[in-house]
Length: 154
Image 1: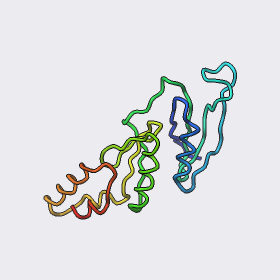
Image 2: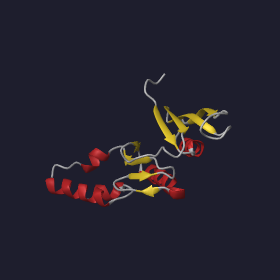
Image 3: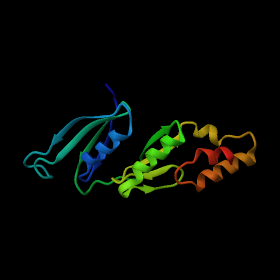
Image 4: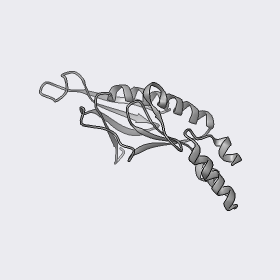
């Protein structure tokens, strides 16, 4: 069993968020859903928690009510093996109200921050030539979604 589990608290969209997330990654599934009972601060029968896995990593999502919000101070980082994988995740996570950020960062429609980056980003940014290394960083800083070919050419 995993010792540390990421716990994400939504206003009321845990069910929709986990359905989107588990549709994006192999080895992902919704494992268990619990519901609010009478006397809780949210309506009886509404989703309370969703236990789920993304690429084999366990998470818990909870509907906690309007006083819970996400910040950019924490994000889910995804190492992608191709531009096609970057493009697919970027497009699906920014659709329906998601917001593109800078340098591979985005917010999904539920307010969760993600970093969608190439697995070899460090290698793409390195160069023995200081001017070329600076050029690569400058190119990255202008990007929203990371474009591998643009970094290779910088």
